[in-house]
Amino acid sequence: MARSVVTDDARVPRAERARSTRRAIIEAAARLGRERSGGQLSVAEIAQAAGVFPNQITYHFGSKDSLLVHAAFLGLLHDTRRIERVGHQAADAETFRRNIARVVLALPSLPLVAGALALGIGRSDLAPVINRHLQLLFRQSERFLRALSNDRGWHIERPLAQEARTFWSTALGGALLAQAGVQGSTADLDLAGTLTIRER
Image (cartoon, rainbow, N blue to C red; front, side, top):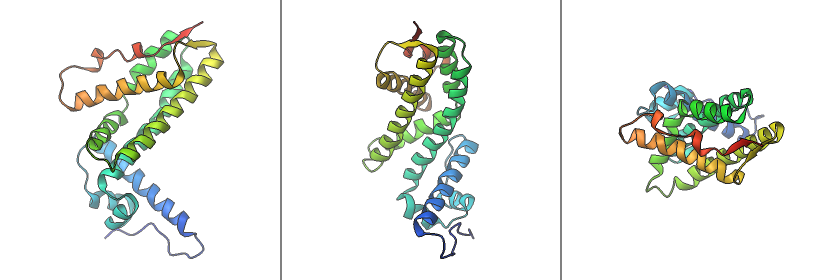
């Protein structure tokens, strides 16, 4: 039987215990999702990996699908650190566009997020969760592009918000097509071409 990660120590505030439990559940689901490459996970498996009781997943997230959305985006946000490292290493804007596209299409979290988006189709209860995570991803990407272009003196030919949304919509759309069984490979997707960052 799983042992709850929530401590009975009265000195730990209830809100802090709840945050700790939520974090443990999300991280366990994200880890299992990567290990299974997007394969089916049960509530019992996730609960055991997180060291909580299955009913705590329902309590904190409402449903397994809601949890899987949170976990998929957590994995992607962690992967953005790798994207930023690759971006900072680029010597020029052309190399930046090419390398960023290559690393994003190879991210292990990309298919998981595409799966999370598929879960949200026709699910009004998941739409706000997906929207919050996408908005966070877009804002983080905008900050990265703004800082890098200012540092390098590069120019972006359209508004930052449009640049980030176009890039991620293309990447995630390609991942959704792959999950739907559409024939082709990442080589068929010109993700680098969606970026308008250029030398001045």
